[in-house]
Image (cartoon, rainbow, N blue to C red; front, side, top):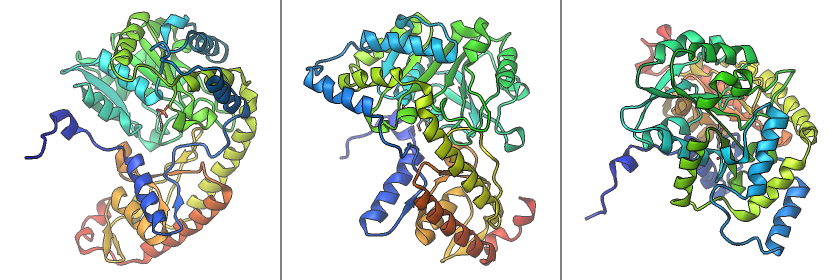
Length: 414
Ligand SMILES: Cc1ncc(COP(=O)(O)O)c(C=O)c1O
């Protein structure tokens, strides 16, 4: 008899972005030339200073268990970075280091949530938020942040979603998958909607450096200090320093919450890799201007991608202010049959795109927005150009493909 799995394991969905990456890898292994726009990582080199610091940490014998909350130097450097760059005031003891921002969010959910609790998750959302909430036994309450509102959660919608059971509200700025950046005033309005409700707030700022065209990143507790005591700020090194594989993130918040999360770390990972923590110290010594060349290049790729998508049949695309994704609406192409398969939703769209055009994209359904697909432009210009040409051809074919019998009645109502 097979070993039975727990209800928790059975209820957990796989990360759609990781699933797409696995499919693209499998096709590549068969020799297919795949353009992978599913990836969520910078394609730039790791800063030299970080590479050197990692080597030095090994040579210096920094190979033992680090303190579970993070090495003291790094906690202090993060607190200083939050003060200097984000206008946030945290003591080093109010910061903990985790094995990625996702792991920080996971630990926080485990120590803040339980059965019966509700968590407001604005959609489109980062794929892991609902699953992390469910893994803590709580219930995600998905609230629409529609494209017509710039993919920003409105205070009215937030207010309507609050109940006496709401324990946490997720905020992600700049956002994955939409690239939406919450202006300071929009965040203040959200804080206003929470003034009479004691819920906690988790703000995920991992894409903070990736903002374009004059958009500015702002951190909620810096804007509204009165909610600081019930807010946790999550961030990490993956998306700013091209070290997704090094697995290093952090969170800052009230001391008792940080202490509880660290207790969980002691009983699970024991702590983030010591070598990586020493390298991160160097990352925090780099001035934000060191990121300017990346920003310029990504800004150009973003324009190029949006312009190309807007010229494609059946596709509409908002200009994202941040991150490195575009989130076009492709639903006008649903209901067509191509190569024997009907494209009826974002999953079948992405399957057909990969199968027919060898371009990997992530279905919007995984982010709670089935009319869309997510494309990352964090790939070389050459790959991007090739991928966009392929997508254009694919969309053209799809537009001219026969309408599936099952979709004929439904098309008019979409
Ligand atoms: C919004 C958001 N938060 C957190 C993460 C996870 O980051 P990390 O690599 O630090 O775990 C991601 C990764 O894609 C993300 O998009």
